[in-house]
Length: 188
Image 1: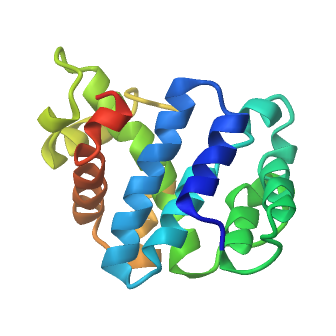
Image 2: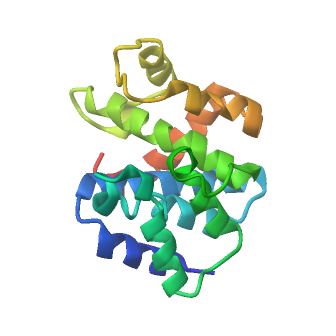
């Protein structure tokens, strides 16, 4: 299996935008925390989080290609099948149709991807712009404001309750705690 160091190398080779890198770090940290809660393989789940948008800078103008470049890079590094590959294939399934979401690791990515961005948005509207001052309550308050971070697909996040059997407030807390534990790497 590809290591965290190899995943970071791929991410850094193909992603120059610091905010996009930080997004992938955040998803990676949250995925590790979810793996620990759900009995998954923390290294693999974090690696998936780190790589899920690694090709975005190259594919943002052709969204139906998103994840296909990353899959090619994995293949070049010897990762041609298995749970990590399938999970990455399912990430952009609405446009690529490569694979359906199956299992906890894939549902974790599906639900936490948007949540990390929402939490960052909550932190950035605070005068201090610090994750440590964000709470589940402040996230839930903004959640109810449909105009706030309107592009975030709240329904996608809320699937955590049916697919992972984690109540939304607990899911937010777990993700927030993971991000707060790495606030320096996230620049918040």
